[in-house]
Image (tube, rainbow, N blue to C red; front, side, top):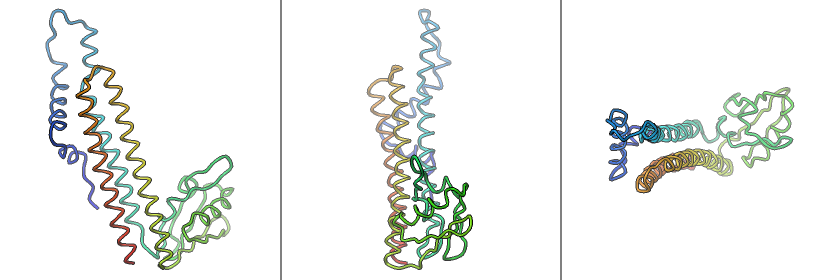
Length: 238
């Protein structure tokens, strides 16, 4: 599934926001070479460079790249999911209950395909065998795992209406995880923007940047929804 590159995303900005983006980039690159008047102090020069808009341009690139990676990971996970066939991705949403809290199954064990109808879970620590088995069984995925020696075997039932419903729920959890990551990247960018505002950026500039950040967020959120709906249709037809 094609993912929009950061450059394509930024080229997609239109109107005053995109124009300001270009103006800031040019202004930031020329700022260091501008001549200072006789009354300009070294301190003022350093303050100007510290608040250079070029820094915000780099933040924008970083935010878009992070969002792109989050959406890309979701695309890979969804592509691997097949109804009625063993696939490690169906366990991605499982959290294992441990003493003092819980942790993602993927942090505690390796999940692999044993054969077309079975997954094998190999814990990093055998002490987590029982919690892993219990957590998979109670994850509302319609799975009935069993412990064999130092592994957990997870039979994957053939596609039925019930199993498809369980799988669709798992897809929703994958998409929500991607949404959470995209929102976090947006929040990080907004925090940096707020910090830049304290360095003298005007309120008009801040509002324009906020719109650009939200535009990027909306674009990637839409990609998540498109990917989820496409995979849901595929599973429903299986």
